[in-house]
Length: 133
Ligand SMILES: [Zn+2]
Picture: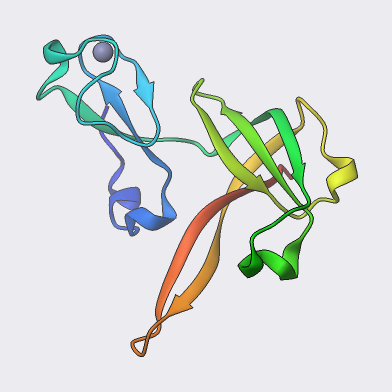
């Protein structure tokens, strides 16, 4: 599947890129170079696949014992999200009170600054999920 030009021009850190197996069509996130289902038959047939970033909460946990760096945001919600494409991933669920997260709740991906590092001020971004609007 071709990725529209518009998306190719956006740095990959703002995209949720998975891989699609050209042999069996299986989707994986994070992207893989070899399909876990087909093994060697998929070599050279793996394509990048841009995920919609929309899905629903499959299960979640409220984390109270956050690492020191996360002091500002505890407690926080860590969930397993199943995307519309059927791919599951683990992510922090933000912009919602821990008590208001529900299984099956529609969510969408959002990219947030995770931190800044070193003299060059390299800014790290990562994906998180929030309730879908
Ligand atoms: Zn495959």
